[in-house]
Image 1 (cartoon, rainbow, N blue to C red):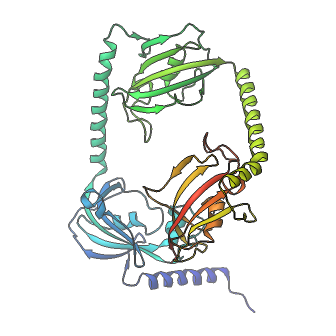
Image 2 (image 1 turned 180 degrees about the vertical axis):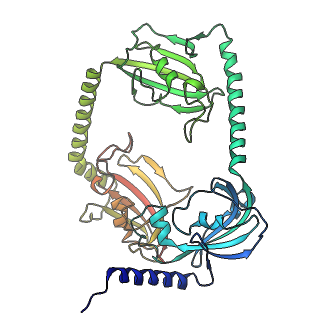
Image 3 (image 1 turned 90 degrees about the horizontal axis):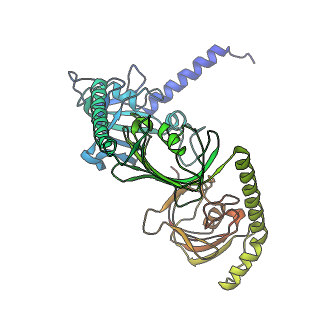
Length: 441
């Protein structure tokens, strides 16, 4: 059989894809930037946004008959965001670039593009249908130019800076405070131990507060953390303060924002131009060699304890079984399934979106976590998103069912330490209620 030249095969493939797109997006116009759109209201004389502008949009996102998101539940019924480069041809950003102020339109694209290009998945997951179109209904209600956004941000930063300087002035003018050459404010230092040298390791507990007294970070109620003297990870002011706190002593400092995170801040935690109050307790000072030796000793002790816990787990489970009068046999994997209430709804299959409520206990019957009274837990069954013992148990249940599970560490969290109440190789107890099962479309 004569083979077609490769360029003809490519041409056929392209024509096939174009034909497929036209079939899926029938009634939609393909714009110059590749977006498939259907306009409802057109304001040809209106302003058009450009990349870098902020847009104010009312949005509804749907797939098939399902509505995934609507901005009508947001304040004002709209969302505001920066218009950026498209993550794939014909996405929502591309659609907005074709719209005028007060235009109303629908942009359509395949779910494949969103999963692979935007979300970085290798393929469309099994619980979704490849080739399904997503429709985004939009009305462009406002445009804030990039220049206006920059001017507003600059104004807000200047206000933050001025407020910070005014607050700091009170500390600088207080004669009780000691001011270092860099501008670090020393409120108090207690203790007579030696100070740390650059490169040595301080084992400390500390917290950071803003000047209003609101806690931004608190590491007092835990094991001391290791900080190398001279490291600038938390800013120049923090590093300088470490040199003043003696071994076994405490210190309180005000770190001006210029010596902390300055005009940048720390994403999601510290605003720009935020000066900090630092309270610190220095437990000990170690050389690098002493620190490494201590860490090795600690690691070996934890590993020995974890191994001992794993070896003793069968005896702990047997004791728990006897104390709670459990009279069912474990599964081949070691999971005990105690049915509390039989459900009468659908069963669970791979790829289903499963919704459950749960209580989590350790083997000492201490409640660690619960979803009851808050939002239930939702996950895709069979995608290894959940504790293996729970997935195994759900295979025995119907919607409406309730059960208690005794799960050995190998089917639970394994050698992962969750916290002090659930160290590595811990047996866990779950009460679960299967609330809902949604079949993939």
